[in-house]
Image: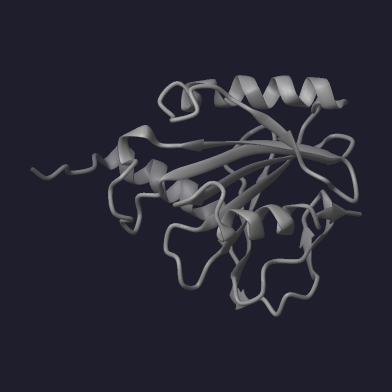
Length: 194
C-alpha cells in the first residue's frame, strides 16, 4: 500500500523543511565541546570518547520557541544515542521536587508498559542547574535479541541549566544499566550553559 501526499501535505513539508538547520557531525575525543545555541547561550558538553556528536539541529517551525536539538550516539552500538533538546521556557521547574514531578508526569505513559511499571526519577549531578531522568525497559523486548533501530530501553528527563532554559533529554539503549547508558549520563552531567 502506498500513500500519496496531497498538494497541501507537500506545501506543509516544504514550510517545515525551510525552518530546519542541521550541522556537521564529528567524533568526540573526550574533550569539552563548545556549541553556540542561538538566543540561549554557549553550551559546554564532554561527550564519550569515540562517540559521534551532531551539531545543533534547529526547528523554528514552533511559534512560541525555537527548539535546538543536539545528538550524540555510539559509533558501534546502533541503539545507543542521546538527544538533548534546548528551548526557552517561560516557567521551567525551579526546584528539585517540581522537576521530579514534571519528569514523572511526562514519563507515566512510558512507565505503564515497562518492566519497571513506574517512574523512578533520579537526580543528575550537574555542575550547573538541576536535572533528573527516569529509565525504562520495554517489557515486550525482554529476552529478545538486540535489533538495530529497536532500542530495548529509554531514559527520559529534563534539565534546567539556567533560568528560563529547559533541556529535554531522550536516551536510547539496549541496557538501561549498561556501559552506554552510563557514558551518556556522565556526558549529561558535564553540561553547562553560559
